[in-house]
Structure formats: C-alpha cells, structure tokens
Image (tube, rainbow, N blue to C red; front, side, top):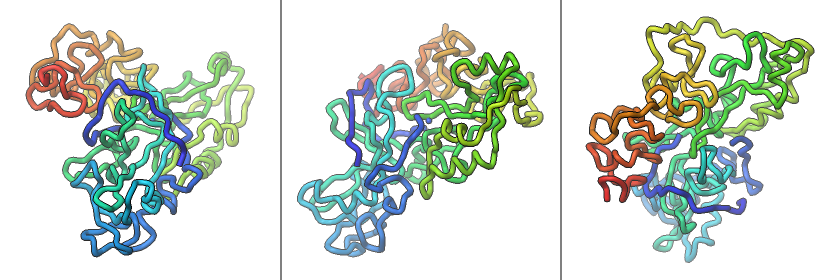
Length: 389
C-alpha cells in the first residue's frame, strides 16, 4: 500500500459523513485498487473479507465482525490476530485510492485528512475487522489517529440503508463508474467560446470531498487562438471513449482526460463548432435558484449559465445548496448576505442567508450559528460550536 501522508486538518469528522472530483487516481501497486479482482470481498465463502452473519460462517477460526466505527455496517470475516499487522489477508479485500492531500477548496486538507483512501483495519478482541463500511474511507484526526469514516468521493451516506451509496446529484468526481468514465460532455459543460470548441471536457474539483463541475477547457494561450479563429481541435468520440475505459478497474475508474485528448484529438487551423445539444427548454421565467435546479447540469432558465460553475455560475444558484459563496459567487445572488442564519427556518432552507460561505448544518462545513438550532445536531463538525458549546 502506498505510504500515507497527512497533515492536520482544520475540521473534525467523528461520525460517518456524507461526501460528495483531482484526477489520476489509480490502483496501488499491490493490487488493492477499488473494484479490481484483488479488491473483491474475499475470494470465497468464509474467507477474509467475505460477507457473513455469525462466526461459524468464517473459516480458519475467523470472526464475523462489523466495521469498528460503524457497528450497523455489514459484517465480514476477519482472521484471528494479535496485532493489526496480522490483518494482511483482510487488506487484500480493501482498496487504496491515492488522492491529493490538499483540498481543491481554498485551504486545508481533503475531507479524509489523508493521501490514501481505504477502509482501514483494526485487531479487536482477537480478530481483524475493517474500520469503515464498504465505499467508506478512514478520516484521520489532527493527531494522525483514525477518528471516523466518510463516504468515498461521489458517494453519500444513506440513512435508510446505513450504507454509502452512489450520489447521482454530484455532476462529476475523481471516482466514476466504468459505464461513464468521463461524464463531462458538451451538454453539461460551458462552451469555451461561441462557435469554437477544443473538444476537451474535464471535471474540475472544488470541495474537500473532490466533488466537481464539468468544464470545457484549453491550455494556456489556446483559448485566445481559438477565439481569433486560427486554432481548433477535431476529436474522435469513439477513440475518446475507448481511451477513457482503458483507465478503468472492474467497477470504477478515473480518466486521464489530458492523455486521451492527446491521443484522440487532431489540431486544426480553424475552430471546430461545438457539438450541439439542442434546445435545453430553459425558460428565463422559471428561474434557476433551487438545490435541485442548481445541481442538474442544465441551463434551466436559458440565460447561458449553468448551476454553480466554478468560473461562470448562474448567479441565481450562488449560496443555494452546495453552491456556496466562494469565487465568482462572492457577493452575488443569495451571497449578498444581510440576513441572519440562526433560526429553524433559515438553518434548513439550504441557502447561505448571511453570505458567510457556510450553509445550514452541512455535515462538513456548517454555519456555526446553526449548530444546535432546531434540527441541526451537535455532532461532527458542530460539536462544541455555536449553541453546542
């Protein structure tokens, strides 16, 4: 497994948290990549990592245990142990995603405070067990000690099933499904210039959990040349798709967008028209100002701007839901502030009412004035903050 590198994080996560893009995540050299054959949940019934109900389901004196940090999670067989170093067999059923330690946000580390995302392992009462449930990863505290779990990028915690599940509301992430290795396309990305396209669509991360937005991008100087009408790209869609899938494991993948462009796109001396997507049906009178409309990757109001794009957001989305008030959204839309955010109504409306960049009782970045107010809990990032003191 790659060496874990960590720094102190400016927040604490003590319970399983919902998370919702950093590119280039690959399986580690020991074959513990997520979705690979080696990362399967055990090679057979009763073996380490295999699902179980009771201890007698496990072979070799193994114990049937839930994750240490999540006793409601699914149980798996863990071999006998004296110390955690005895749990190498269970490690073969784990995954190890290498990610950037620094958050793509303004400052601090990523949500997990680690450069490797894995379920983690412990030796407890004589048997090995995972620390976190499937599709979850260990969150490290300021002292480099495992403090809890958070769902992997592009996953969220589902209270009804007590599992980390795929989050369809996240436009794109460092982790994608094999059947859509690059979800970014001309229909959900801002066009570089009208009548000019590079044909390159990429996910840009912006949150500590690597959630991102789709953009059409260009290298330094290309955008100006494209706008001047002397540079364009002709990209082979079939080649692009095949190239992207080459980077996938059995179930999930992360795509080398820049590498695929180099292989599948030919530079031309005239701009290429962007691929048409038809009428989006946007109606300016409908507005684009709700959590649902601001995360559907569509220009609902037909004003030429989509959701909380990192460079060209629809100002109606600023401060709404996960859009926040950073970057171009500062002082726009609901980020104008001027209100308080300390009541049951304002702490549950998914708006940044006071324009301070934090929203309601968000699991990772709550508005401190909402902590302990109404249905906002005093757990996780709210512990000891605001009314939770």
